[in-house]
Every structure is written in structure tokens, then in C-alpha cells.
Length: 199
Image (cartoon, rainbow, N blue to C red; front, side, top):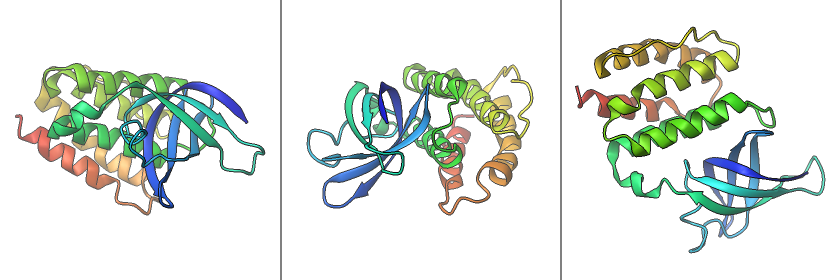
């Protein structure tokens, strides 16, 4: 495997003393897990943050081998990690995506939607500017993985967006995260609590 493409880094787990196993979402190949040598080092630590957009050079010698990747930062989400609401939203959408998508299946619409949602979270002055995108992304994820999702509703207010998010919670827990060992829904609960403070 040899791939050089833009990717959204959606998860990173420490491996050994300095390396990281990262999960990268690309438009043409989908989700790929890759080994990043020195991922916890001083130079790469700011790059290996979930939500960051990177230029990834991914290579493996055989299909059975975990690929290794070299990353170059394109867009950093680091400045928004100190903002409680933006940080919770980025954590949730990245954890949800990393936990639900099968590896090496392309979902170009999800790649574009996730990139747009992350941009909106970082650019909008408040959650009112991106809550509709969050609802749309969760519904698109349900639909792309074969669980319905329905048409994207128009959202007139933050309160209406929160009502729809509450209705989607049971579907996400039952269909997308039922077999997940990690408590991914904790990230959504934290985000929901922070959104409720804005109403």
C-alpha cells in the first residue's frame, strides 16, 4: 500500500515509548490505522491531535502489515482545545467516527461532512453556528452505515437542535456503538451538558 492524501486524524493511541497508532480518515480509502514513529515526540505531538487535518504519506510492505505514516500538519485544531464547548464537540465527532467506521471502506460524503463540521466548530462564534451541522453529520453517519437517519431537518434554534440530538442519541447508542467496548457516549454526554448551558 502506498497512499499520499489529505486526511483527518480522528484518533491517536500511545504505542511503546514514543510512537503512536493513529486512525486517519481519507476521502478515497476511508479509515486507515497507521504507525507513526515519534508521534509523542516534541515535533509531532502538536500534529497528532484528533481533529487535525494532515497531509499523510502512508505505506506498507504487505496487506497484512500495519502501515506506517508520515504526517505533515495542514490545519490545526489545537487552539480550540482550550475552549470547553469546541473541545467537547471535536472530541465527540472524532470518537464517534473512529468507533463506527470500518477500515478501508471509502465514505467520501462522510469525509467531506466531517471536514466541514470541524471547520464550522472552529470558525463559528457560538454553537448556534454548528449545531445543525452536528445533527446533519450524525444523521449522515447513520444513513451511510445503513440505519436510516432520515432527511436532514432545518433547525431554527439551538433548542430545536438539542431536541433532535436527544432523539438521535438512542439510535447512535443502539446501532452504531452497541458493540463498542470503550465508553464513547461519555464524550457525547459531556458535549450535551455543555450545549445545555447555552440555552
